[in-house]
Image 1 (cartoon, rainbow, N blue to C red):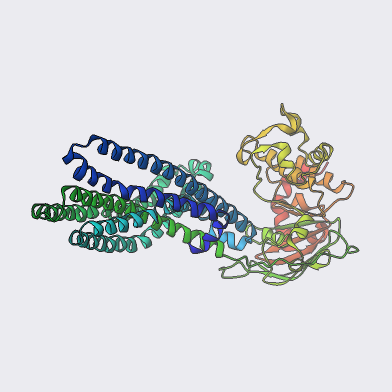
Image 2 (image 1 turned 30 degrees about the horizontal axis):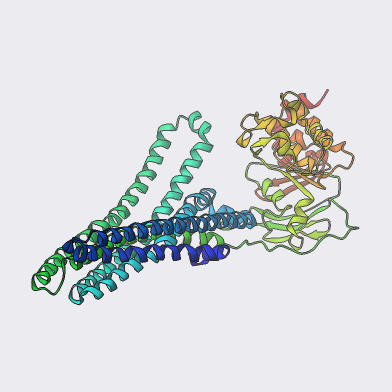
Length: 578
């Protein structure tokens, strides 16, 4: 949690003024019992209405000034807490963007979402209450005890004993609940993960009639979270009753002692009332303090979880190089490349070597799980090769600046992802300075121009979250268009035409080859027909290269390619011949 306080640096003034105004309010509150004692001891016995009215006027003034001070303090505290959480959220999001795929895989999406939402909200609430009460409550408690000593020493000793007992109770409960709150937030991650998984895969769940099974699984996780929350809640809930018991017992002793002293003439009735009021103030502030401790305990646990994410460092170090101007733009080379994912028992890719010249089309094919996506993910450096080198424009990708490397590359992933906005705003992700002609040209190449023309608002047609108001094939064509708007030197199509019919797929590949400056294109596909006209075809089997060459050469020499092609030949031959 301490590591997060750096984000309060822009709110130093608010962090000082908030507690100061709260202390000012508390100071006025401590004066009130003395005025009440004066009214009881001086005004009422003497029947001096003028004196009573003057004292009442002072009470009104103290109340008004205290109210103004309280509102001002809450304004500064809220401003600091909101700004603090906003900066943490911004820093956390920016930090997550710097992490490689390896760290993102390890952390998990649901965990990061919980950190960004629930955890930061808890930290914000804790910071707000801390600025308002962390100094005020102890100030009132110890101030009331000091004021009690000015009235009567024996009664004040009772105050000191009560405060000591309550401090032991509060801090014991706090130490017991801190680790429990951490476990609660961890279980909340599990529930969030289950929720996200079910909502994302709701169609699959319904298709397999697994609603009841998923409901039961979610119920088990939710019940475990509920039990954990109830357990920590019971301990936290014990704080107020225990506090009331101790304080009320102290009040009984105070009134008894005060009554005896009044009877003996060593203490006035007004002073007994003042001591009772000070004891009541201590009761109220300790209850507030107990609630504050609970909030701070939650905030500290959540803050530690956020800090752990911020402490994660990317396994990839950004390079500083830029390829020479005379380097062949769009060339890619793999030199004895192997890849092993973190925590995996075996390599996903082993000793891969091949070269792609600028403008060439490279097909990547193989069985499910053979490493096709892993291979192309090494080019934009989503993952780093465990051994060997991946060269882009003659330079090792690990030596290049990431922004410079990825500026040259456009990637269309397996899952077509559109963002909430319009078709135009999604296409401009590729190049925010692209003209409308550029957008239309990219749409035409991607075979998506008819999709846009069929919409009433054209390029300004709204896109819902995830592009759910478009079909799978439309989403794929629009994501390909977004990549082409970038005018990349290297284009990676990672099984991104799986929802397209054979004719549209063929037209798409033909249009890319006929571009004025065609990019070096990597086509990852399960279809032999989609890569049969590639300049080179890389055939993978269990992470190894089973063959590299043209379609005809592989048909003659590569058993793996022969098997893949034979399994698809009959349906595809009819679509591509004649």
